[in-house]
Image 1: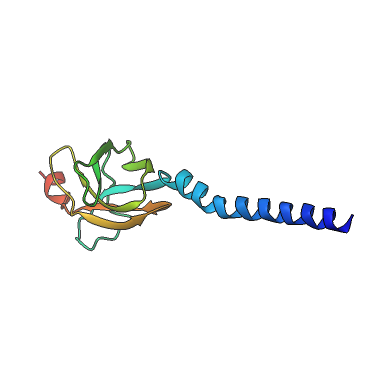
Image 2 (image 1 turned 120 degrees about the vertical axis):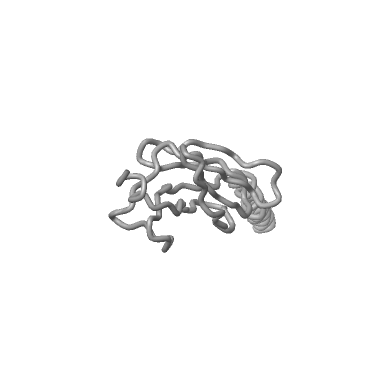
Length: 134
């Protein structure tokens, strides 16, 4: 009887080990497209790459997100508040840049490895006071 009990325990331990060893592979497959890049496009009037209270967001900006080494960027439009979100991105290093309605471009931002959620605020260096004073 002890031998049967020992064999049952050994079988249970083997099953548990197999499941535990398979879990990381299953998680990797599931997480392969779980990257998120979100942020805000704004006019950086003083060129310091820091969003400040007196700097306006860029409504409906065109945002480009490209996996480094990838062929073509993913293109999305920011909402009326200048915010954007891209989901289901494959794990990898990404670049982000934006363009306003007047074709003013931001610099390209390297957001690094995307394997979870990454925030990328995208400054378009542009002095709005010149257009507002006309």
